[in-house]
Image (tube, rainbow, N blue to C red; front, side, top):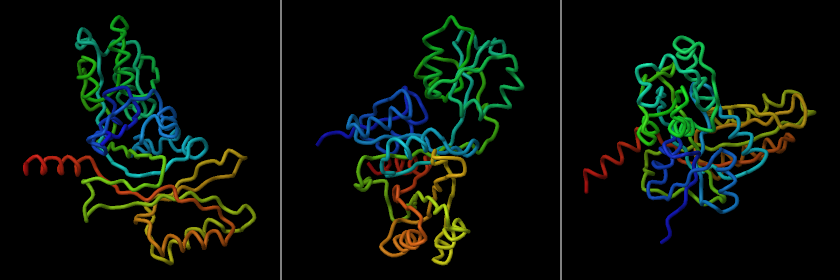
Length: 300
């Protein structure tokens, strides 16, 4: 039996790699330089599936993931995992005691935003430089030891690239969590021993409103409300066809069934809306999967 290949936003040591490891524990993990490259690899058959960040509790949706998914590389959402995010300031070991004098800080744009107050208070004169991932920032520091610079990344990246943690947990909010999504190239179900009778499911739909229908958004929400279907999230993204034109991405807190969700879709289409189911998938947390792993090891 061949091992599944799992793409992730790299390089080694990224938060996304940790999410991929938990969702596909026995897969061969392959890093990619950017989120679009990771998603393209699934469509082109280079990997069987991929894990990318979708949403952060502090900074909101990862727009590059949503927009590339919607407009360029339509895949199937197959599973999600929510993980706590702790950002650290990493430097070359020789600069551990002089970290406040670094000239430049490298990281992913969302990580920079998550640590805005720390940077403003302790590194107000440092230049900011963006990388494709936090792990890429750590790798850059490792490969350029002569540069008076720091990276914002996680503890795994510090270990992977031989960097010192100058300051721990520098993110501005303690409840910093990121939602990662597993993407596949087909509608095959995510099969994993992690799924149990207690596993929660989510179904994600994309809806575009009829432009000539007054009160269309109200009618869309009413189609869910009278069926007593709970929505865990609703978000708009531009269709890129003109100002005021949006897709609505809606997360439904239930697995796709044979009656309720198809009924919603048919009602919305009757109103002139376009409706597409982007995936119906199990939802996990990192703590939950770590607990499962500990239980399995104890039973062996």
